[in-house]
Length: 261
Ligand SMILES: Nc1ncnc2c1ncn2[C@@H]1O[C@H](COP(=O)(O)OP(=O)(O)OP(=O)(O)O)[C@@H](O)[C@H]1O
Ligand SMILES: [Mg+2]
Image (tube, rainbow, N blue to C red; front, side, top):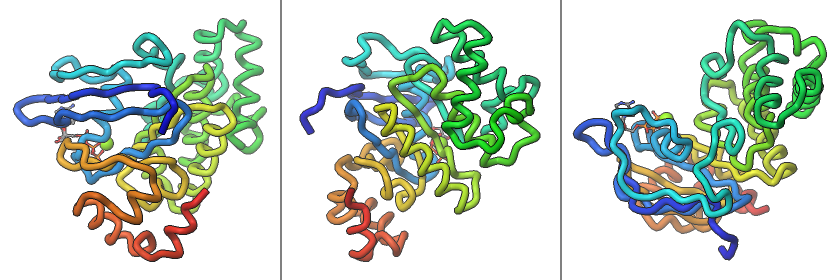
């Protein structure tokens, strides 16, 4: 790929205690791409996302380098990247209305007045296809369904028009139908805004339906990274092959063909 890296990770190792959660990882994130980080539980996916976001706990020990050529500085939460997590219940503030929490990010990072920020928040609720956005502005998170809350988290994450969206198991807590709707929404928004997407998931089948590249992790090591079609059709690592075989849908040629853009 010829595009400049948006983020370049070199020799990245992270340890919380004795055990390394990431081991000498080298990985480029290309501007405007959708990159899936795949791997079983404990493989270091969240640690990678948190390291890029500068959100590791203090006791984590980090070696190696991360550079952001396109930004020229470490990304600022909310402004340069948005985060969408598995449980929107933890990322949304239960005592603020939906409108207030989205507007706050827009006010802070886009320099809008409160009134303008509220108008922007309502537009965002329309963009994430939340039903009855005007009414939802005054609702509290607990009054919405899980899927609706995830739409709100996405609206909050993109409120300041960040260049990067990090989605960490953003659809894992949702049922299959809602999961597909949220993936479709993320895919559309990322394309429209030209955002770079880091889509962290244990579900290779879900990711491979819409990302450009996949990076496969196991026990803190990056096993392989490449375009989704080549990784699916000819995985370089036996572990990736096993992951693909475990999703029977992916190991049959017709569905691999469907992955084509
Ligand atoms: N805050 C922490 N303190 C101590 N150890 C941690 C911490 N966070 C993660 N780890 C350890 O680091 C390793 C990688 O964890 P990480 O959460 O990055 O994996 P993951 O791939 O995101 O897993 P999952 O799919 O379950 O979310 C695991 O062994 C985990 O126990
Ligand atoms: Mg995780």
